[in-house]
Length: 293
Length: 53
Image (cartoon, rainbow over the protein chains, first blue to last red):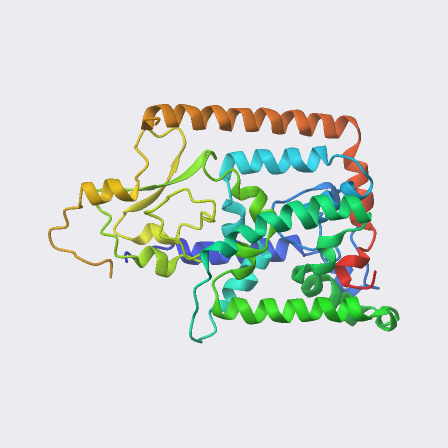
């Protein structure tokens, strides 16, 4: 694997993003309260709870549910998500999502690692349709928020710590959320970005656009040896050469270090998209280097 | 089966459609004052998020 500065740059950008999004200091320190300014109108395509005392922007998933509850179409929110999805696909998942950062940090804990069954990736689409659109519309309540581990992490726990007057209200729902957060933490220690891949409704929404987004990934057929090192470094555990623009790909670019076999590209590039059968028909010629290490 | 060139044109067309639809939705959302609704909703403590309602 060629050493690049990209992974470090990505960690820095992820950390800065998480800090900036939740940097309403007054909300944390002085009589803990929510930010109520105009920046709350900003919809960023990242999972960040707007009940967090430091949060500036609104949560896109919470906002969509709210519009479902009041029986209106969330035109502005959907418009922003569609445009950003069409421009960069799931790039925000890999470069800016605070919950993605949280999961990747947890996965660094040295334990035996497990693979996620492939069928589970369809779960996030069900969560998107059922818990974000259908159920909130029917029961007139923000149903996904009741399950969201990010809500417990950034909203529930800090609010309970900072506001003692809320503590007596912590009942079965609060402890259910804490249990969901605990299970999520447990799972992501063993399985790479489990929440992003199996549950995240925002990831599911953006994944729809991965194949047609302007930013794309390309695999260089002449240099790929299918050594699967790309899968080893991939935060979502995919073989990038099988489908460079898989709906699962979060465009983190960590696979780019492999002998320049993978790179960022655009939809306007005329280089052909590589399919596995093409690699089998045209096996790469690697004169001296036979593995990505 | 579409060849690479046709596939690229199809993808570009779909991207353009998505961007246009996105812009239309944003304009419509701004016109019907979604912004106020988003700010209002965002500034009220989400009880579901913190697990007490």
